[in-house]
Image (tube, rainbow, N blue to C red):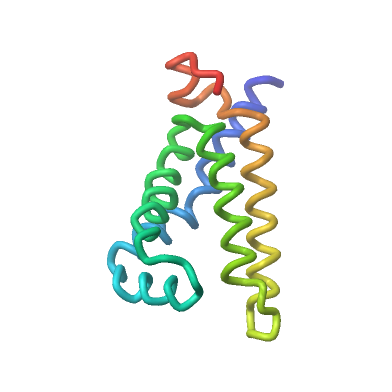
Length: 130
């Protein structure tokens, strides 16, 4: 049963960061537009490199199981913040579903932070518990 659990965690770690890796990479290509959008929403533009680092770099870290629990917790906070900053105006089309999507993503990453990366991870090879 443990092997099945570890395999399921690996599949989850492959599926969960896809959105973040793609979004982070997209922000690199559309840097100026993303920075303007962030600033229009009241978020300082200097935060964009950190956002890219978390989305792209953190997404890859989760994918490979590196610093999994820490990155997952940071992702929980990030995802909740983006829900409230960018998706809390339910009068705008799509915001309610995006808000709930962010809550769901945060829940998944919280579970990953508690559960850990599983057997098939760099964290296990490095014997990193947190």
